Image 1 (cartoon, rainbow, N blue to C red):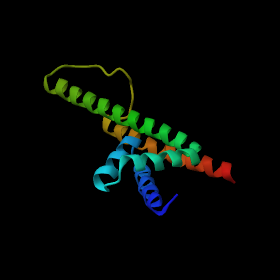
Image 2 (cartoon, rainbow, N blue to C red):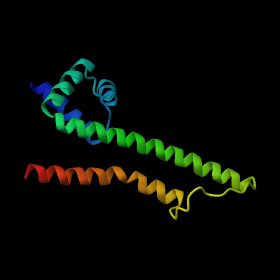
Image 3 (tube, one colour):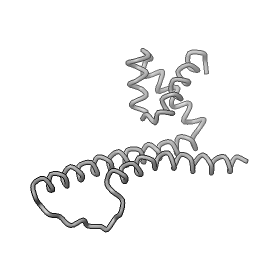
Image 4 (cartoon, rainbow, N blue to C red):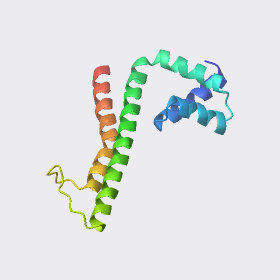
Length: 129
């Protein structure tokens, strides 16, 4: 890749560290760095061709990130509804006997991505040994 493409590649890699989607990367580089989307797309495709295994794992992590975010939103709604029910004097019976409070649960769920990355990097480094 040429010098210009190398700097685009470096910017894309910085975005990947932040778990940005392809669309987010294209938009960020277009708006903030004034890089034509066609150039970003070309470099992205080249990176995908050269690093198929990485991008397969990366896309799985993006899916997990989206699912965790959605779960946290649902959990937040549940907490608000339970708080509203408490203030309205409505009694409710929890469905599960879970000993994990919603705030602790949210904290635990948000850390799944970190744990997943650690497990993946450990297994990936062992397979390269």
